[in-house]
Image 1: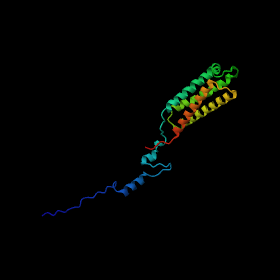
Image 2: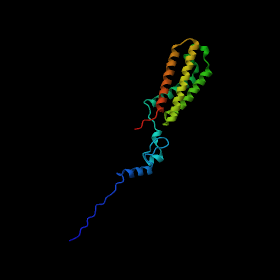
Image 3: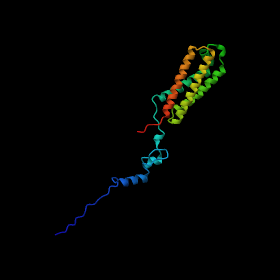
Image 4: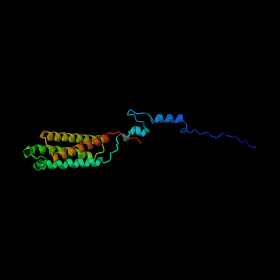
Length: 190
């Protein structure tokens, strides 16, 4: 008779099913470790390359349209004010003696300068640049609102043109401020 030796079956250790081994390997790879920025890295690759989700942001609905329309409006009004200051000033001011052509041209030059900044922000994906342009636009429109309001109060006459300007400056400033706040929000983690 042949002696048959029975070997015990090979027991293969599955390190992935062993909880302690899995935790040790994750620790060696640096996965699940809290980084200095407060995020937990899911892999060594994301730890070395960095997390691109930090820099990505969710664009609010209508942001690009608002940026385009703002840049277009600033460009058009700046060019009109720079090239035709007398006719534009006559439409805005009923008193012909109060129009200063050089002041209107300087105003048009300032609007064209701001429009160049706004045009550069239309095509960028950087959150910081978009926020700064929205903030500068908000500040400009708020100053225009206050100047128009003060000028109308000094003359003790609120004309229809001044009312339209106040509404346009106020709504535009609020919309730019809204987008500034929305772009500044931290993205939700998925």
